[in-house]
Amino acid sequence: MSVSRRHPISAPALAAVLLAVTIMVMLPPPIAAQTLTTQYTMIYFAEQADLDRFLRSIGGGGIFGGSADDGNLVRKRIDGIIEQVMDILDMRPQHMRITVFLVRGLGNVEAAYHGSGQLGPAPPAFYDHSSQNITVSVDDVTEGMLAHEIAHAVICHHFRTPPPRKMQEILAQYVDRHLK
Image (cartoon, rainbow, N blue to C red; front, side):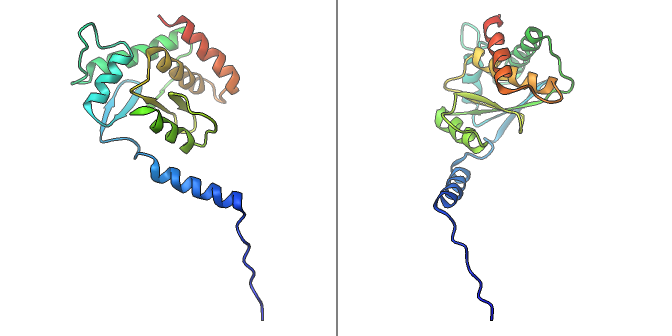
């Protein structure tokens, strides 16, 4: 008669499994119910107010605030920033498409950051090359922050094999300094 032995799961392995399940349960669904398509992006957001706040934060709201109701202002602004980044880097990747998730608060950015396998403290915005997603907090994003993350996307799309992370960071910081 054979006796099967169960291999007990180690405490670190159990903790990792529990953390992964907790993150999957806590993550908001791949954002919300609304989308906006631009030449280079697909933007996901929960409510119109989030899109309006995003537009104002990236410098597209004009002096009187402006609304993103029809999406044309957002399309023009985000594609304009992407084209500026491409000009600064002198990189124009063919067929580049980026998904942008607009989330509320740093807690949701952190959940997405750790959910994508990243370690350490989460920044208010980040680009994940494996999914080609930019996730930003509508409460904290700035034009420069968005351009920095777009630079990562442009760099990764431009090269067949993306350069090392430190090199990407140097180029993204170059974009920060030279953004108009």
